[in-house]
Length: 263
Image (cartoon, rainbow, N blue to C red; front, side, top):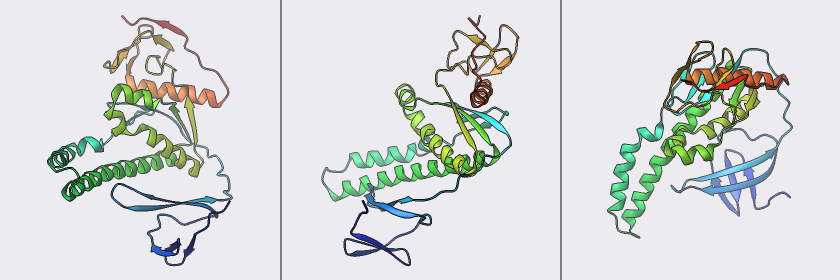
């Protein structure tokens, strides 16, 4: 059912409940507007969200390069073609300012105007960090979606990762990046393939298929005891993710060939 109580005017103006507001438009409004949502953040900034029904023309799949991406903690992404993409770690960069503002906040009397201003200052820093991270994710996702036609990734369990590694995972923003990557790939016609999260991509030799029984997280490289190949942990995982993802896309099952203990 269509909402009532608002209508859009020219020159980026909107009438809501009889009051006229001017807004900054982030993108053109396409299709038939179904719902309008108004939200206010902790800084007092107001956002208008429009849900539109559109008849989107399907994007034809493209031919080109395929790639596997491995998400990490030491590095943001390892790419199967050998590239390493570091994360700026925006929250870590802003920790000094955040700690300073938290100390200032702790000295303010509860309920006072000074405390309210300190809260706003702290919220502004958090928002700036989130915006910088989101901008970085959008630019990186667009670059990858335009360069490759098939992108293979792991089905990440973000909540479990946050319980184990906490703030570091939140700062990297893997979950947000995956959502943005899927959006950008949909626009460009790039196919995203997610492999099962329990596939041992790091422990599997990408040359012979041998699988280690154990591989500690702090071990960044290892030697296959069967074929003698030397593997960088993250790059090896990215290659395996590409192999499994490409096989899944083709409808061919991929299983480890053997298992053993690395001595």
